[in-house]
Amino acid sequence: MIAFIYGALAWAMSGLIPTLLVGAGLSLVTFTALNPLIESMLESAASSLNGLPLAAVQWTLLAGVGDALSILGSAILTRLSIVAASNALGLRKTT
Image (cartoon, rainbow, N blue to C red; front, side):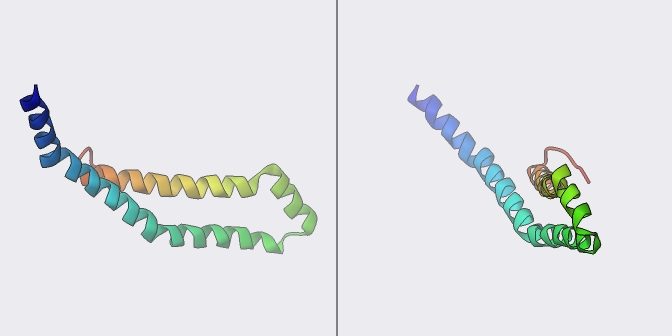
């Protein structure tokens, strides 16, 4: 039984754990590098609302446009991280 446990640990240390750490590191690097870009795009979209009359801005905020922009930015960063991790792990090739 002990030999089985040592064999399983040796297998995990030889391929599984380093591969997972590379994928996690690449996801972190992707998020860190692209987060300022996505935030600047969202700030640009939010600042473009400044030209609207106050009543129109209030209606857009009540309609949830601010939440929608936040969800959109989070979805973009999540998708980029998933693509980077799956390419690093060799799971599938996506664009």
